[in-house]
Length: 193
Image (tube, rainbow, N blue to C red; front, side, top):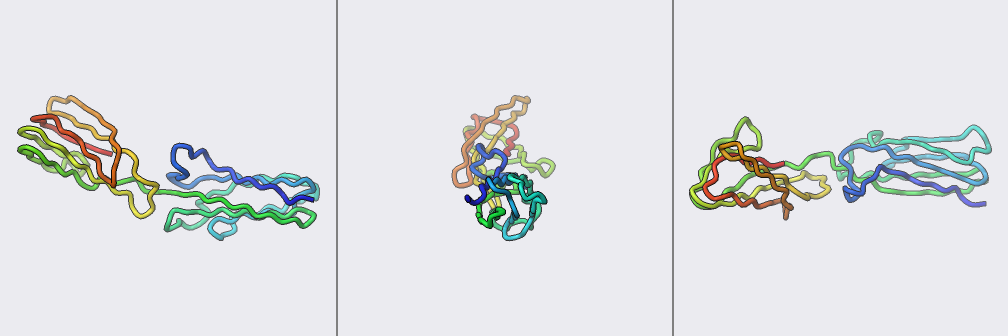
């Protein structure tokens, strides 16, 4: 007879390169043509679920586990191991890896350069800065993403002039920075997330 078949199903991660922003459910499906004896699911070496069907003829089992069942991983990696044994004693082990980045990126610094840059004070402790220029300028925005990082992709930047006009841009981050061109003689605020 054949060993059991195992599948480990995760939520769709097509937009995140295999990374998730928090704990997730995993559905473990086990099937066997004879009958299943025992299924064990481990995350990072910790047993989080076990199924021992009571009927000798049970040919399939579904177990749902969550990554919150184990301590937070220091590197964001969660190894899922499933071991199944059928009633004939055939054994199979299947593995998969899940990555979790729990922290949002942080806007660390706005660096203004150009003609006659005058920077105001931070407003209310947020990431908005009042500034004005006599001429043209650029702003380099520095972003970090902590120790466990799925990577930095884009930065959303808003320029709001003193008359309430708003301009929004989405910029690619390169080595944790993005550069925004500031309109000539601009007066207003910049924010980023």
